[in-house]
Image (cartoon, rainbow, N blue to C red; front, side, top):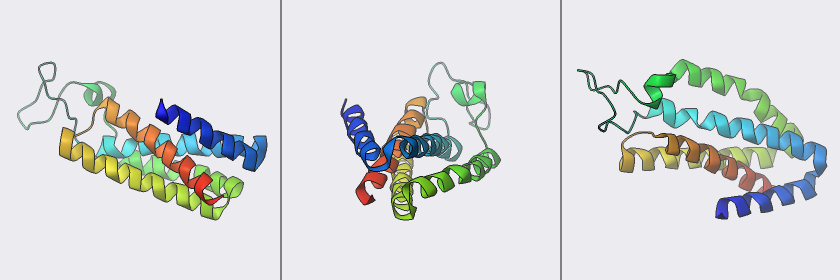
Length: 150
């Protein structure tokens, strides 16, 4: 509920500052970048669940679960996603300005780094909830950075 309320307030402030068209461009860029951020814990952390429904091979790798069923992305996929996010970053810079875009991106990066550390420490890997939280919190970080410096 707090996330939804904060998001609503941030979107209201962005809409009042940028107008409808630029807000649409900003949101497109923010949504794209926050979804790219999900790949970071997915590629950098092992699957956290190795419970009764999971199977582990002789080398200790999980052979069932989300990562196995749908294919865990590798470093190359992450690299391509980051490369493909360059237009979203450019769109964010053009529509919001250099300082707000940079501030939002830095906050999102620190958010993802925090999620990585917490996930590794408390869960010892990634879960679908961690990936979803990464997307949501990095999106909020981007929006907070935009509003903070506009």
